[in-house]
Image 1 (tube, rainbow, N blue to C red):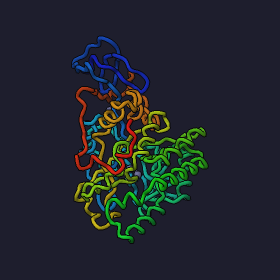
Image 2 (cartoon, helix red, strand yellow):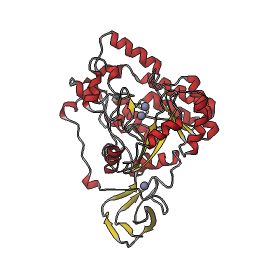
Image 3 (cartoon, rainbow, N blue to C red):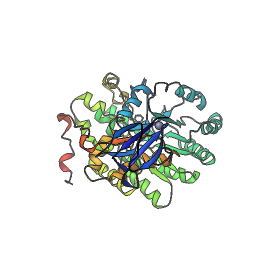
Image 4 (cartoon, rainbow, N blue to C red):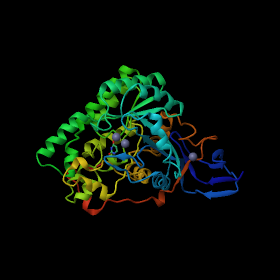
Amino acid sequence: MTTTVIKGGTVVTADLTYKADVKIEGGRITEIGPDLAGDTVLDAAGCYVMPGGIDPHVHLEMPFMGTYSADNFESGTRAALSGGTTTVVDFCLPEPGQSLMDALKRWDNKTAQASCDYSFHMAVTWWGEQVFDDMAAVVGRGINSFKHFMAYKGALMVNDDELFASFTRCAALGALPLVHAENGDVVAALQEKLMAEGNTGPEAHAYSRPPEVEGEATNRAIMIADMAGVPLYVVHASSEEAHEAIRRARQKGMRVYGEPLIQHLTLDEGEYANPDWDHAARRVMSPPFRDRKHQDSLWAGLASGSLQVVATDHCAFTTAQKRFGVGDFRKIPNGTGGLEDRLSMLWTYGVATGRLTMNEFVAVTSTNIAKILNMYPKKGAILVGSDADIVVLDPKRGKTITRPPSSRRSTTTSSRASR
Ligand code: DUC
Ligand code: ZN
Ligand code: ZN
Ligand code: ZN
């Protein structure tokens, strides 16, 4: 078998930074050390050699809000690879009444064109005996994480009795429940009120989902998980209220994990104040972007370890799809992209600004989620025997992403203390 050596670079893992060559054979790392030889030699002098990124939260070709998210497994995984993400985890979404295994067949059929590694979480979108039984079969397929939506009333949302039943089932199966934590009843009521008052534009999307809606649901999910005796993973934690709930639970010794998105770390609510409808609508996602105080809380959580993972919730829609919601913000498909840019954005706004160390960068983009999802040390590590899913990052040739001038000033920027 031919061998490849990544030569002269600095290996950066979640724990260590050291100079070494890395030898690869048959898709695995076979040797790490000085002066290695191989059939192909890749010059990594001046570069960092890190475990490939894992994005545990993507929606590729997802049926949602009357349409399908625009990136499929072909374009989405290509974007992932070109940005240094070598594994993505998508969400299999059964329709109401559909068996989980039937939904999984449908999701299996979507992946033929995938060019990076992938896995699935299973969503529990309804509850019944069939779901209870299917959950064991899903775990038998190697899928050990179950997502629950506490929002999207009348569509994906499950109620507290269903949450408790499913979390209890997860506990019995040794599986990990995930939650999209927003109070869907309150969101629906606020949406109606805003529409009745004539607030129909994209900014009303943010007004309908204030941080309290997220904080309440995060606390509730944590308490329900505690009663069911199961760990909990909170996807797209976007606010200080959600972070506080997670932090408090962890201080009490509970295994609760929090996942901020790169979008919430770098974009704020001022995006919705942009007078260009398309600009604001392209940024409509749930939870919405927040003011800077929430961003600072999320960055602090990543540095201190109370938050563990940076993901994207990649769920891209075209401008034409976003325009379904002209005149009614409730119909704007929720979602933004990020799969290609997560690592470079986190490097630029995290490592280069001193908010995160390089080792923390590796931890939150790869190693921590590999451990949480039982992929470690096959993934998330530079170790002999690990998959050769490797990113070579050249800090001198960083990708530069700037905001368009029209969005540079936000309503909250001026009040932010300079760092
Ligand atoms: N939020 C989004 O913005 N899009 C996909 C699903 C979700 O929860
Ligand atoms: Zn969600
Ligand atoms: Zn999502
Ligand atoms: Zn691989």
